Amino acid sequence: MSAQDTALIVIDVQESFRQRPVWQDDIARPFVRNVQALIDGAVKHDIPVVQILHTDNDDVFQLESGFVRTLEGVQIEPTALFYKKRHSALVESGLNVWLVEHGIRKLIICGIRTEQCCETTTRHASDLGYQVDYVTEATLTFPMQHASEQVFSVEDIKMRTELVLAGRFARIVTVEQALQNAAV
Image (cartoon, rainbow, N blue to C red; front, top):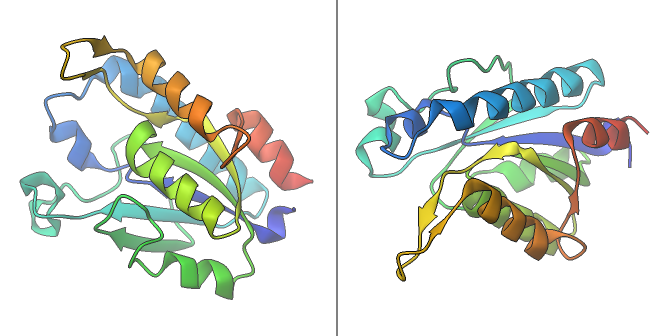
């Protein structure tokens, strides 16, 4: 794979999440740096940057809310922009058609949330035949409480996502590795 058949998919990096009670600036800061490094690296290597924004009936995810826009602190001028209403960015958004039309076979996945839309899109992309590099350090999630009342940390959730994706649906890579792999 090379930069000519690779696209960076930036999923749900939007202000809607900042409006949620789970939002934590301290967790978000390194995520924003890593996403920006991926975007900047993709631009440098002429890799298309595809932005995905989530919309639904939740107040802060409705287009009219004003929060369905790029997360503050992230600078992006996407090659293409798609809106989705499902967990997978490949369902009913037009993304898959665009990828096929542009000869894209490899995806670099980053965004919000690690275990939800990023993981779901990765699984779906793999099933469609795409090679996927999953950049965990450029995904964001928040602690979650199980019905048993056990709290799972961000690290727990990210580790679990890597466990279920690695070698089956994606390669787990760092920002640097994703950009090196794409430039080859």
